[in-house]
Length: 236
Ligand SMILES: Cc1cc2nc3c(=O)[nH]c(=O)nc-3n(C[C@H](O)[C@H](O)[C@H](O)COP(=O)(O)OP(=O)(O)OC[C@H]3O[C@@H](n4cnc5c(N)ncnc54)[C@H](O)[C@@H]3O)c2cc1C
Ligand code: FES
Image 1 (cartoon, rainbow, N blue to C red):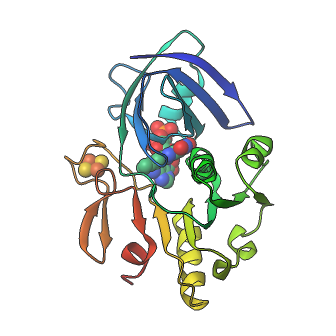
Image 2 (image 1 turned 60 degrees about the vertical axis):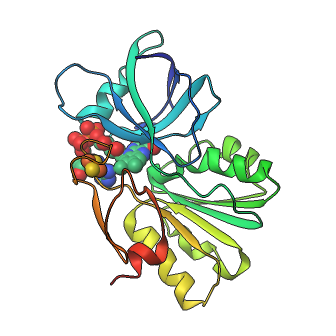
């Protein structure tokens, strides 16, 4: 069990929840969160927005019963954090890196951008929102350039040919469009995509999160959530 330190409402349906939990999180990993006893049956997967070894912070959107229960948590209350899980984004890349996020997919990009910048990369962040933009000051502080779009297609703003690496998380359609743009422009930059398939166990035991890839069926929770774009979108 972890103690909630803060659960701040950022907009009508987005919250930032910080909990005390010792951790060794890598950027792009996620936890299975639970703030109830028996119902809903399943814990909910949420990416790590930020972590410092002693605390973990999550950025989440209220969409249903589980996330609605998270939104009611107050400082001092308990939450079950199971994790961190998943492979995360590659840590050994360096150069000019674009991070492209849409909706709740912006969550894992904050810590990832900071980590790449600390290792000497140039980091450009492209964030797309359907409603009010969130945490612009915070994201701006961990990037060399911040591009924000509301209500349009954030993928219109990026020229893949400018980058050594591209990292993305968001709606599958956005990531697929970005993959196609990379292919159409003949970019050599590897594209890393973070998949957000529905999950049940979160630890590789149930197959609910299975995703078809060029290398056969893979479990998003254990083999991912990060894959090369061509592995998942290059299979037709
Ligand atoms: C690896 C991973 C990381 C994630 N990281 C974040 C994050 O950082 N912040 C965040 O807000 N959300 C994140 N999600 C999505 C989050 O897990 C779901 O929104 C949450 O489980 C919904 O639970 P609920 O009980 O509130 O809604 P439910 O009642 O379970 O569902 C409500 C609605 O949301 C849809 N939904 C549920 N899960 C997903 C999903 N995985 N993808 C698309 N639609 C879904 C359902 O189809 C339904 O329409 C992540 C998912 C995965 C797999
Ligand atoms: S969620 Fe059970 S195998 Fe991935």
